[in-house]
Length: 191
Image (cartoon, rainbow, N blue to C red):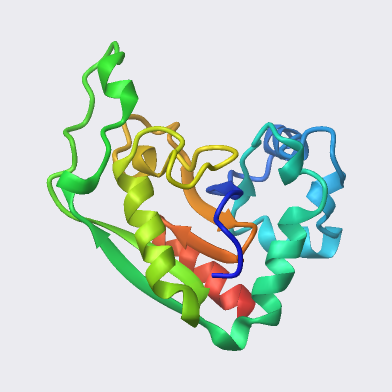
């Protein structure tokens, strides 16, 4: 791992391409560069796979996202993809369970897959990071992330609005997903 893990961009399943979804995704990068600095051609390739969650910090808005994607593309020959299973005892419960006004689905009773795309030399550190984030409910003190991954919400969804199902780490260039389709389309994009 070249740098410590600090910036992790959350990714959301793509929505149907109507005017509202196009407008809402236009603000994913706040007041920074248009599309966070990603070219329109690249955005056209990405839009059917995932959307970017608004992170609320300038570090995500001024070119770090396209730099991370370029790094992955440049290192694609050394990138590997694999699946890890997170056991229910290692999933931090979704905080919304405590405040839900309606009946929540049951807490997961089976291991949940996380699909990983990273540099082959970083496999162990990436897996350790994902397992740590899955278990912890809040922004981790161990990694001092600028913004939380909210991975536990994806592993323990309470309602259909829990749409974060992918992540792009910006400092070292790796990705992980709880949605297999997003993962497979991302792998195909970089092939």
